[in-house]
Structure formats: C-alpha cells, structure tokens
Image 1 (cartoon, one colour):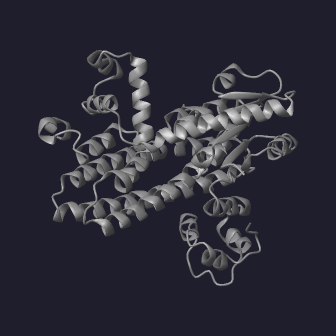
Image 2 (spheres, rainbow over the protein chains, first blue to last red):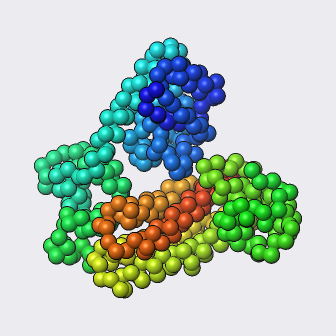
Length: 202
Length: 226
C-alpha cells in the first residue's frame, strides 16, 4: 500500500465519483475520499488542508470559480483536477492543475492522478523547511516598512512577479497573511531591530 | 439530525454551544420538557430555520438550503444582531482584557505588539459589524416591510464588502502557537487560544448564516421585486 492520500470530490455525480474511485482503487493507491456539494462547502471545511487532491466537476458556475481562487490561496499545496464534459469555462480551465475528460480511459485517469500526487509530495517536502530564505527575509523586511510590490522590486532588482511569488511563500511558510502580524513575527524572531524601526510601531 | 419533537434541554446537554443559539433567538433557560416545536411556536420562529442554525453548530460544513419566508428574515436579522451584541460586549472585550492582563505585569515587547495587533483587529471587526448594522440589516428590513423599497442599495454590494476578518484571527493564532519564542506564559497563551478558537468557530457559523442564508433570501426577494 502506498502513502494514504486524501481526495475531495466537489459537485460530482455519484456515478462519476464511484467510477474514478473504482479505477484508482484497482491500482496501488491508498485513498480516502470526501464529497462536497460545492466549493464553498469545501472552503468552510476546517480540515481542508488534509486534501492532496481536489476533483471538481466542470458544471460549476461563475461565482464558484471565484471560490476556487480562495481555496487555492488557503491550501496552495493541494492539486486541482477538473472533470471536463462539455463547454468548459475558460476561467475554470485556467485554474486547474490537470484535467480528466469524460472519455479518458482508466490508464489515462491513473496517470493523471499519479502525476498530481507525485507533484504534491515534492511540494510537501519543500514546505517542511519553514525557515524563510534570505531573499524572502529581505522582502519581509521591506513589506513591514510598508513598501509596495513595485518599490520592493526596484529596491531588490527583481521583477514584481518575483516579489509576489516571495510574498506567497512567506505566507505559506509562516501561516501569516497580514503585514501587521509579519511585523510581530519579525520582532519576535530578531529579524528586525526595533530600535531601527521604531517609527513602524508608533 | 435534530427533529422538531426533540426536547431542547436534551439538545443543549449534548451540545452546549446551543446555549448561545437560544440566547440569540431570545429563548430563556428554564426549558422544562419543551420540544423544538413548542419553543418555536412560543417565539414565532420557523422550526426549520431554528434546526438549521442548531445544526450548523454541530457541523459547520453542512450548509443549509432553506426556503426562507419573508417573516423568517426578521427573525434571522434579529438573531444576527444579537450575535453582534455578544461579540461587541462580551467576546472582544474579554480577549482585550486577557491580553492587557499580561502586558500590565510584563513589559514584553512582543506582547505589547500583540495587544496593539488585537486592538486594531477589534476596530476592524467593529467597523465590519457596524456596516452590517447600518446598511445590510436596515436594507433587509426595508425590503420585507414595504412594497417599494426606499433604501438605495443592492445586496451584491455587501458581497463585495465582506472582507475576510477571519484571516487576522488565523495570523494571531499562528503567532501564538508557532512563532512567539517559548516563555513562561503558557497558561496565558492557552487561555487566549481557547478563546480565539471558540470565537473563530462562532464567527465562521455567523458568516455562513449571513452569506448563505440571509444574502440568498434577500437576493430572491430582490429578484421577485424587480
């Protein structure tokens, strides 16, 4: 038996869910599945970070697509697969890590799931190293000073895109999103010297 | 799943969070042998609304799908107002007090920063609650009480406005659990965290009632009127 992986099925007809599970269970996978009626319900699920893989039916609507973005920001390590039947929505399509088409055969389905789970394992390993890199620490310091992405990019000679990606990593590693909380983190861990930054805490 | 013939006292014994639910519906203790049906009839509450909200406290992941009637909206708005009152007069001041009690005796810099972080957070929550109390709730009441609505507002504005006050709460929990260096403050941190976890759960349910029950009901009303 392989490592236990958790799958969330969202807005999925039972027959498709059972079909996919039957295909996967016939292989070496060791899976546990939960079902959710919609993305919102999964978003509200307190233990959602347990899911390695989220399989979503393509029948979801515009509003739900916004919720996928929320979901991705709170559980960035989970992979999202869409089940594509007909007329997939462009925005939905672009949010997916991979797709299963309704006419895919079982070996294709296994291949896609395997690919997603192996990626997942890699990124999981990375997230064990929760210490910030030197560059991330530089970005953190400037963020705390209230600098914008553009100002940080100019100061560190990197692109705005890179700044945004550092910011995402900081949030994932620390579990902290707000600048104010980052400042407390930085003081508590001696990343910034308060005497040099007194103006920040007036 | 609870049903309308169940005794309310039994339900509370199984899940004491329901004490808050009763209070917010204006139901006093001294429940005797009364069932859900009895109490709801006494207080003019739709039993399915009552049970759906009780059920959310058992499992916040089961989003209720309710067929809300006009008279239910008044009940739900009142419920939400009472919840706000509880946050404003009890939960948030209590957490403030807890944090102050440590900063008063201990001039630890990180806790002084935590205190400020929480005070700012509290102001944000107050602002958010006030927005709902001055815009959303009056709009809902206006919509159900008159044939021609007088307040120029659309509920979709609320959806855009509803910023995530849960994020900073999570930040604070992570600071206390992971990032603040180990110190002789464990009991204090534990008490504070218990309070924060409890508030977080309550807030999550509160948000579901607002977004999935009230807003959906108002949207339906708007569509019927336009």
